[in-house]
Each structure stands twice: as C-alpha cells, then as structure tokens.
Length: 201
Image 1: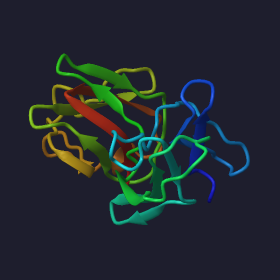
Image 2: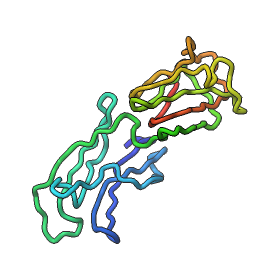
Image 3: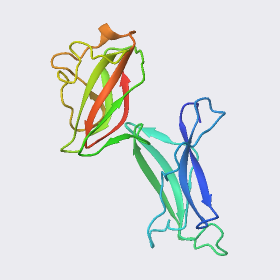
Image 4: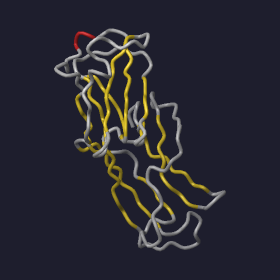
C-alpha cells in the first residue's frame, strides 16, 4: 500500500454485537495510520444477505477508470460463532474515485471555504454530485478572503451534475493560469450536493 492512500481496516465489535465490518485507515507516509471516522465502508447486510454477521475485506484496492474496487467476503455467522455456514458470499464493493468522504450540503444550502493555498495548473476540476436539483458555485478569493475580480460568486457559473472532473467556469473564464502561484482561497456555495474533492490541472 503506497503512502497517501487508504487501506481496509477490520473492526471487531466484541463488546456490543460480536460482529465485524470494514472501515478505512489513512496514512500520509505508509507508517503512521489514522482512523478519523469510524463509519463502516462496507456495512453488514440484512438477514439472508450472506453477510449479516461478518465482513472481511481483501488486502488492497484496485483502480479501474474512475472507480475504486474492493473485494470482500461475507459470512452469516457472528465472529465467535461455534460453527460456520460455508454458504458465504464473495463480492465487490465499487466506490467512485476519491469518493470515500465528502462535504455535504442539503437543500437549505451550505458554504465551505478552504484554507489559503497556492496551485499549479490552469483549470479547476471538482469531484461533485449535485443531484438533479442541486448546484455549486465557486468563488476564488485572495489570501485575506476578498473575492478576486472576475471570479466572484456573482460571476461564477452554476454547476450541476455528477462527475469526478467537472470543470469550473466564470462566464468565459475557465483558464486560471494567471492565478497560479498566488495565495488564494476557494469558497464553495453548495445546495443538495456532495463535494468529494477538487484539483487543479
């Protein structure tokens, strides 16, 4: 597993249910690992699903285009069951690229402002799922939080759809090469959407 990625982590909840599900651990250097959130990445199934008692993931993940594949095995018995029903399941979980965690906004809307950053590249792309009635607009600010002329929320185009590389624009402006190397902030105004990631290309 190379640094800067996630890996499957098994969580045996012996004190509550004697069951096992799959969570993720994160590392930036491949040595020190963290689990900042404990929600299951692969949940236990309903009765009759073949994975209502125990889920165990294979080592490593596979990137296939814009998807991440993770294979796993499910059992109907609990972790410490005295017998095993070998009618287990072997299955594949499919995640969108960089889709393990997101900043979410409901229909009332939400706002997200990044810390100051600098970038290389010419275009800003979002990994975004707005739903049919959702939208996102992006404002580019200077390091002090003032909107840059030509890149304010008023000038930002409304983005709608589901894509891992949705390009942002401000009318005719799409090329951000003139801002590369400057300290800026990004302000996202979102409604009914999930923002998974952004990148400059």
